[in-house]
Length: 107
Image (cartoon, rainbow, N blue to C red; front, top):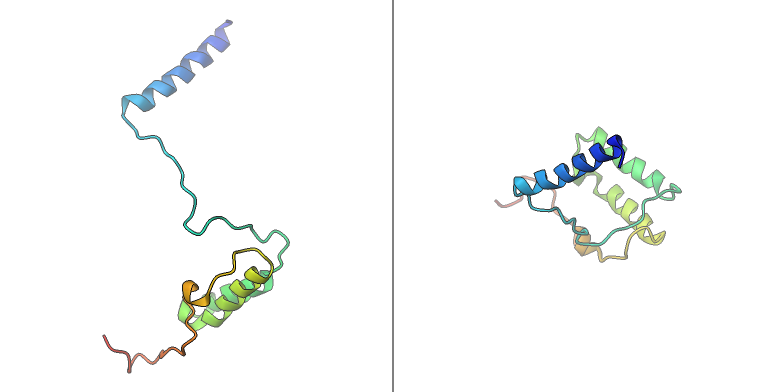
């Protein structure tokens, strides 16, 4: 071994030992609960996404006021096979009309 490769080897071994010295648990990443889905590289649902993000921006990030646009975006993703088909109830969209009047909601 030449001098440079010897130093690289030593540094590599020291790196292995230091992680064991401090008893760090190794990190094992886990997949998301719903699995992974492809990114929209071709921009097939970009229009719906931008409408939703613009709404959030204008409504002080209030998702409730932009819910229909969120549903449009997810519908597009499902139609283009960019995510798995899911029941709307599982995605937080009830078929029942919601009562958004805070005066009538019970606590």
